[in-house]
Length: 325
Ligand SMILES: NC(=O)c1ccc[n+]([C@@H]2O[C@H](COP(=O)([O-])OP(=O)(O)OC[C@H]3O[C@@H](n4cnc5c(N)ncnc54)[C@H](O)[C@@H]3O)[C@@H](O)[C@H]2O)c1
Ligand SMILES: O=c1ccn([C@@H]2O[C@H](COP(=O)(O)OP(=O)(O)O[C@H]3O[C@H](CO)[C@@H](O)[C@H](O)[C@H]3O)[C@@H](O)[C@H]2O)c(=O)[nH]1
Image (cartoon, rainbow, N blue to C red; front, top):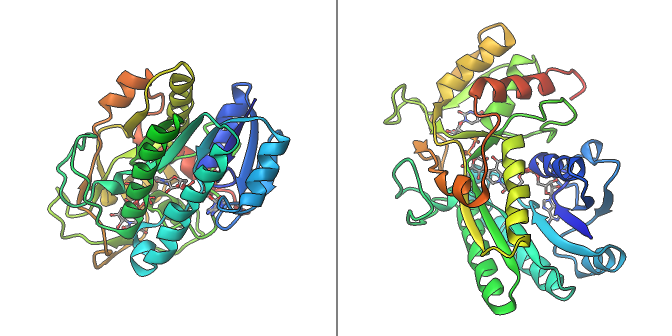
């Protein structure tokens, strides 16, 4: 039996593929390479290039591989971008996921693990955020993921397919062995950009807002190492395959770091202070986003191995600090 990883040429998906292959699974990847990178596609995985919403390509994959479970990472991922282009987010995250699930159900796929986000909670939540907090997304990105969560839950009730919905906080870092990292050329996430500045590929780190109600005025986020994140995904699949109930849980470390702290720490990792420039607030940002991830530890038996911001930044910078990347 084969595991299908959608978005397996992207940042998190490529780390998932590595984790699965390291654990002896057969893997197929479906990716349209819209933001993914062919250089990170694992040589031992079968690669299909195309859109997750395309019925014909799902037919081709399911007829040539015995797909038992799907990790669904493919999607559009930028919260600020979604504010300017909401319809693309509802199309590529919600509608494309609906088409994917409908087509997979025809082939008897039994389990789906879905990439959701802390952005489903939105403005009304206090920190740390547990899964029981109300969901009031502050962006089309958050809504596009929340709608998909609801759709999966309803599809599961109707069809019996097992689902795990994992709400990630801020994912960062790279494979500690240096095999892969975040390769998206124009990724705008804080740690990627800060490492690019430290590696001399960008001139300055813009800090979006220094007047938030936080200790140093900059936004606080809960950064989780990508390798811990994909381990939790593998454990979620094992739990579903053992006959466990559907899963909905946060993935984070339950601690926060400000933008300013990240800039300072990347400067330390790189051996020179980072040039920074204060800018106005970015639309859609919350001041503080920190998880309560107790449920993941209980339900999945997950014990993070890289819960250290310096390890996250060291692996991210090591990956970025190669001129060709
Ligand atoms: N990076 C984070 O901090 C974070 C946090 C929460 C949730 N997520 C979610 O995790 C998932 C992966 O994010 P990432 O950071 O690896 O992003 P990414 O852009 O690196 O990866 C997404 C991959 O999906 C592919 N893709 C996009 N639309 C597709 C489509 N319609 N059909 C086929 N392939 C398609 C892209 O080419 C890319 O390879 C996304 O669903 C994202 O919303 C990410
Ligand atoms: O060049 C930059 C980039 C970011 N930031 C700030 O850094 C913080 C983190 O931003 P970013 O790395 O873009 O992450 P988020 O907007 O918090 O969103 C991430 O985390 C969400 C979950 O919390 C995911 O759903 C998203 O896909 C993922 O991009 C925010 O305050 C940004 O304003 C800067 O100041 N300068």
